[in-house]
Image 1 (cartoon, helix red, strand yellow):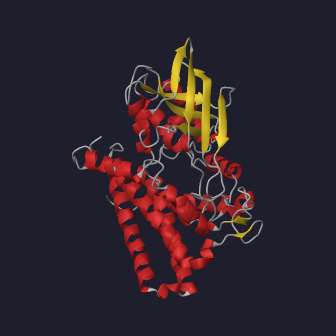
Image 2 (cartoon, helix red, strand yellow; image 1 turned 90 degrees about the vertical axis):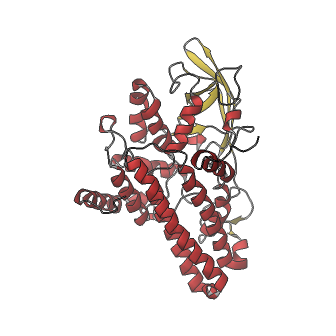
Length: 407
């Protein structure tokens, strides 16, 4: 992959940096370096407002075609933006699932009518989406979905339960994998429906996490309605569409994510130096290992992006990156606690201005700081978006062509 930037790409980077500097002001001025995975120091409503601010500058629809209201940016320009965003210490963004997952899925599998109905609202930051995949008995084993939908005239009626649904309480729509053939099993008979969230047939129950926030939810469907034409890719093709959606999760933003990880590692090295624990040879070796693996992560991301840049589609090899970064960041959280020492096991007093969170949702009487939240939340990295075990199976069976696991 040619890593040199053209004059156009350099100008694009300058435009991104200038825009961020001009708009991280006013109500958004104190968001720098805050937010991100597992951190609840910025209210979701504020992050939604920031998404709309990004939309006003045309930064949400970078990779979307111009005829849909996007910028039609090249893959390199997308990478440049995500890196500039991380370098500006712009706020960690909420999972904009409509933008990163549903939109590309609609462009690949949706009808023209579906694309024109939903993509402009996603790019404008006007409609937010959640993902209805996991169920109590269908987590990593998505083929075990039991939530069902039956066609009743000009509408689908959806019944069942989904769980671990990110930000469902703020979403206007959900894309939901359901079983539309009651006699089917496993991967067959599934369909991919678009379902409005604001209706009597849907109940949302937030799940309080170990970090104190409620990013995840349970969602219950009791004959929730959606139009008959809001099935993506055709009835019975839900498995193929759902797997393609997961592939879109690992694209141009990966290098921006890696830049953010580098900032976290550098902050840990600075803390270890300040406290003197950098003199511990074992800890110093682990920090060096983390730095080396960060470079491995970068080169693997570039390798994956070179496939996309050549016009290829996301494939099973994308699981390599997910497995690697999830394990790396979990281990980084552990290193952070070792640097903190015994003090890392003690939370701040609830309401203390020096702590990260402004409240104490669990009523425990203490709050967590950024390092503590990273340590706790990073435990989930190896579970969500495909567990480490599933990623290893995908890599073994579909990338290395090894024999399938005995079931």
